[in-house]
Amino acid sequence: MNIIDTSGDIGRIFEGGTFDMNAWEAYMDKWVPGARELCTKDMQECLQAGYTWENDYLPTLNTVQASRERLKKAVASFRSVTEHLSQRIRERFCKDLDADVVLYLGLCNGAGWVTEVNGRTTVLLGVEKIIELDWCDTDSMNGLIVHELGHVYQEQYGRLHAETEGQAERFLWQLFTEGVAMVFEQEVIGDAGYFHQDRGGWKEWCESHEGLIRSSFYADLDTMTRENQRYFGDWVSFEGYGDVGYYLGTRFVRFLMKADSFDRIIGYEVGRVKEGFEEFMRTSI
Picture 1 (cartoon, one colour):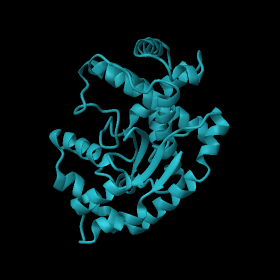
Picture 2 (tube, one colour):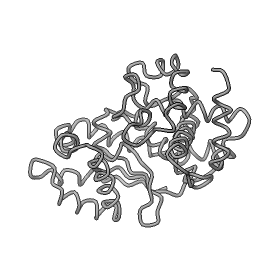
Picture 3 (cartoon, helix red, strand yellow):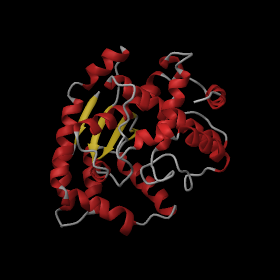
Picture 4 (cartoon, helix red, strand yellow):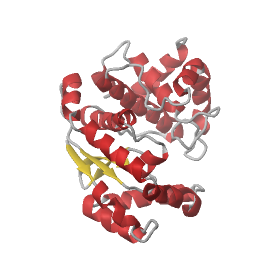
């Protein structure tokens, strides 16, 4: 696993006092060639969905320059978490991961996402979103990084990407893969009850409203779109809480693990996931 820390060059993007797109493009091409196009495409899709550069992007990006102490804390946490991470994963799963883990300044594409850059599996950790969400401490960074590596683990030893038919299958597959990554995260950290999203009573609320989350997700599947979904992302809201799909996905995968091993589950095809979800929905909480 390659660990890439680009934090030393982030200041150059703000030398004019505000975020400079040209400087950002040069920075990206230097550190992660090929990723610039991915970030820009993702941003354009969000802009088409109704977000704006002036109100939703630029303020978040400029916060990086204004929050230097948070940036320092995030960088320190990143370095601390990644120092022995390969060993921790090997101890739990007896496998190694072939990937690049990059701490970088993105275009608000997310605190973490897994993609392919020039043929390499790459975990992109957007420091601008990490700062905005205040995930700068070691525990939060630990959860964030290990979660994204959970996606890498499924890709390299199971099935991360699948051909889905329609939005319902696509969102069910997302629920499944996010659940896999959450369980991977819990297993590496050594705490089956760990959720890096747990702030402000989030976990307790999800536990007491699991039935509502379950039934609502099931009912929404046929009409769910990227624009109206309520389950994935800190920017969406389900009864006042974000990211409840991660909780539900974790519960779903833990349910599957009662009858099968984690390493077999991560290789499930769409049809098997659908069957498992129907079984999950029929089971009382």
